[in-house]
Image (cartoon, rainbow, N blue to C red; front, side, top):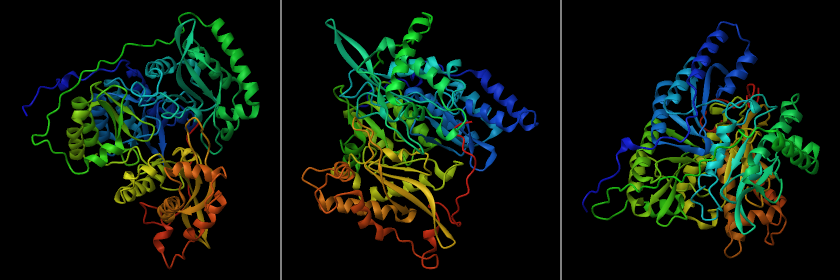
Amino acid sequence: MAQQLRPSKSASKKPKVDWSRREEADNFAHTVKLYRQGKIDHDNFRRFRLQHGAYGTRMTDDYAMVRIKIPAGQIYPYQLEKIAQLSEMYSIGSAHVSTRENIQLHWVVLEDVSEIMHGLADVGLTSREACGNTVRNVMCSPLSGVCIDEEFDATPYAIATAKFLLRNPLNQALPRKFKFNFSCCENHGMTRITDVGLIPQIRELDGKNQRGFKIFLGGGLGNKSFVGHQLEDFTPEEDLLYTSIAVLQIFDRMGNRKNMARNRMRYLVDEMGWDKFQNLVLKQRTIVRATQSVIVRLNINQKPNEIKRPISVSNENGSVSDGYARWLKSTTYKQKQDGYRAVFVTLESGDLTANQLRAIAEITKDFSAEGFARNGFSQDIILRYVHESDLPKFYSRLLEAGLANSGSLTMASPVGCSGTSSCNLALTNSHRLAKEIQRKFLELKLDEDDDLRDATIKISGCPNSCGQHEIATIGFFGGGARVGKDMYPNYSMSLGGRFDDKAMLGVTCLRVPVKCTIPVILKIIELFKKNKQPHDTLSRWVDRIVHGNESSEIKSVGDMKKILSPLVIPPSKDDDPDFYSDYGSDTNYHTITGKGECAA
């Protein structure tokens, strides 16, 4: 087949919004000098550093993690290329995609943070308010605009909200961090486990369709987690900003500023009671609507993305690489736009090298008809508007980049927070455990099992839920345990968490030593296969168990614990020294932690 022309790579799209301010980089460099000279105390510098997106690195003040905000997860090829360059110049040659659609650069020398900020400004990106007691990165489902179940695309509203709130005095000194999450539908977002969750809706009024949202307030994960409450049946789009301002004002005024362990908004809702909080929000919204200037508005760009199909070079012999069918089934989503798919590029715990970032940038230019990528909720990158006829060549390009793993839309792609690889609060290396599970599951080809497809595994290195373990089918959070004087890494396992329209937090089952986690998960799968009903899935079976509705030999979480308990008995250190070390470590396990920086 003759080669056909493709769009010029130099014509890759520019972002609709420049999020940067270059003077912030200069100010950061100046402030670091003052801090090093002892002219700014540690606590004040820490607050300043976090407000500008530089998070503390484990057990040291000399390095930082730079968290790059990607509003709505929308990122362009030349931005990926710049991040690749910055990771090689100032970080460790790799980057990390978080569960909140940010991209993180780890182990950056404190004095180099401002250089990264300058580099980000070159491509319209910022780290401002990616950390600290502010409104964090505004998230939006990566399937918004292409989801077959959505009523309209929420992306323009997410971007407009992010633009309105960035650097806004309204949210520069909140009691604690605050999060917005826009979804496309009930099943592709996490709207019930965040401070403000929004699902687009259309209702008919006077014979016309009116846009609006189903809004949930007061959810969130952490040492104590809550599922959010729906504010009202329908919130018209013109009330979106007024509602957001009202909620932020109430939290700013009434949030607990004295006790960091209880100063997220979900605690305020819980202590006040939902009915009282709901009434307060509705009253405050009326005040906001009446008192805000007419210039206070969301600037929503409703212009649709230009879709211009890039034409790739077809394989001469029409053949496809080995593994293509497996990859296609477990990583792609058929869009509502005929002939196109969204491809979820499978990463290992969100990690990718600088060269892989560049490869994703090139693949985006060549194959995505909208010209940019979207970061997801599960530490992945999604390329949308990939024409189905281009998928075999797309897969070949991923193979060349080492990014063609299957399983991103299955249980075989666990979520794992950064853990002890960089976090001050972590007790276990959840990051590495997620990789170990992923590699084992792909080896066993569990990504091909339809019965396991809708189940999830999520892992946090401590109880603070950065790995979202409480909304997983099988969730783990890290801790330590002892046999005599010898410590070993340990996880508390929960079952039955979910984040859809029946959102619930997982039920604690038992404690599992780190080296027993994979055998325990495989045993749960074995029990499911033995006891499942026709057309059952693992997540449905576990859901029945946690609700006491299962009729097989395992009728409750207690029954599950009894069966699994023999698998988690620790050996002596003499019999199995490796049992007492964490994945990725050859030293004795300990639970030494630093000061957390989730708030400052």
